[in-house]
Image (cartoon, rainbow, N blue to C red; front, side, top):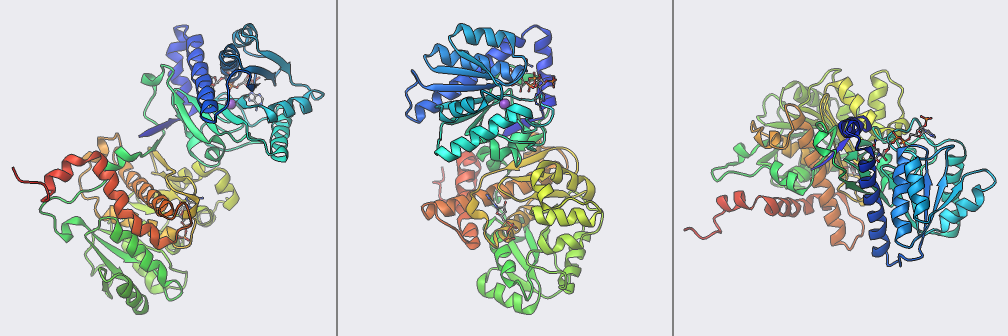
Length: 531
Ligand SMILES: NC(=O)C1=CN([C@@H]2O[C@H](COP(=O)(O)OP(=O)(O)OC[C@H]3O[C@@H](n4cnc5c(N)ncnc54)[C@H](OP(=O)(O)O)[C@@H]3O)[C@@H](O)[C@H]2O)[C@@H](O)CC1
Ligand SMILES: Nc1ncnc2c1ncn2[C@@H]1O[C@H](COP(=O)(O)OP(=O)(O)O)[C@@H](O)[C@H]1O
Ligand SMILES: [K+]
């Protein structure tokens, strides 16, 4: 599990060590980890270290101090290292160490700016150590102009020197991932003590590149994380496994209320997603013409004409491929939401929701749908505002609706109305294809139908109470993302259609669970010799 913390949480964890006079030790560890990351990355690019050119952009706080100490390590390794001081002061210990190691110091002035920007743009590596967790707002003044000039020169001259952010890309809010002013997009962010939540939420994640966490000795003082990312081992622990005496009803039945005359394919794709994700049975409810298509495409699905109350299921999927005029389907969607069973509510169901929901209702909007939801709730956020602050938006949506909210995108965020948030980024941009969201709804619906009453596998991972609905949604996003990636890789990195995500999913499920759950698999398997 990758865990992430707010800047405030990390600073609070540093407090006891700072009180013991260990501030300099923490900074040295951070700086050493940063320098090592630069060295490793340059080596992996095939660059010679001796004589290579490094520019450190230095702010006046401790983030700049980290950069200066890292620059001192690199200068001592024979790299030609320049520190550009962007503020009216610099960390005294870091500056002294940097100069002792033979580094060159330049103060940023308007007159020097073009030459310094050209030097940074042409360098083998740039370390961005202007602002860290102590930033108030984005880069301003000459530091902002410098970043603009470096970016413009790199673009114009097609330069691709390594860009490394110290703790976080300067100008990104450590807690929210929001970007204020210009930001240098990093290849790698080397972050200290624990990942910051803003690195795992867009747009922060767009600028962070690969995130490396350097342990500096504060980890045992960190509180419960404010964000989590499921990795393979966590997925394996959360995936349901049929017991030896399982039958289709005990495995979970998902009721699907999706599709319409206009969008019949959404019903098929939602059913395909569900069938690929371990459910015991799928019951489809919808217009006869759509049911015919579902029967032809997925003969495993049982189509029914009855009401929601007449169909016994363990969870519902509602909304994919439904419009505002599909009254009969919308009535079924509302009944499903009122049923007290777990529900995934997608697309066309979102405008038809009651004002107050519960955490076992999982909403799956993309940014545009979330903006519309806010507008109906009387708040003016438009799509751009949601995209500029995805973490704040998804949390606010969960608090306002009382539901678990999954915001789709390059990074998918899931927020419970209280407690933890999940961030998954397992996919590929090829997932941005029509019908992809319908498959995701099917996968989450199938997982909800299999959730049962066993909460042990969640509490084992530190996920308490209603946080498990968010964990299930995150698990769905992780499976969907990995399946999309696998489908694209099977096409040598080429494009995928939504149905291909469902086709690739069982193998992903198998690989993930076999990796870490071999014991459970073996116990239930009849292919093992009996002893
Ligand atoms: N604590 C520790 O021992 C350890 C900390 N560590 C490192 O310290 C970092 C946090 O350091 P920090 O608290 O000094 O804040 P930092 O991010 O450098 O920036 C604040 C400075 O910038 C200024 N400033 C603020 N906003 C600005 C703006 N928009 N534009 C321009 N200037 C602005 C602000 O000045 P002020 O506005 O207050 O006058 C202040 O001087 C953390 O990210 C990690 O890298 C690690 O070494 C581990 C050990
Ligand atoms: N750039 C991207 N990188 C990775 N995944 C993406 C990207 N864009 C979209 N996705 C994923 O693809 C799916 C798209 O869903 P959605 O927008 O509902 O599409 P549709 O309505 O066409 O089915 C979501 O799971 C989303 O997270
Ligand atoms: K920084």
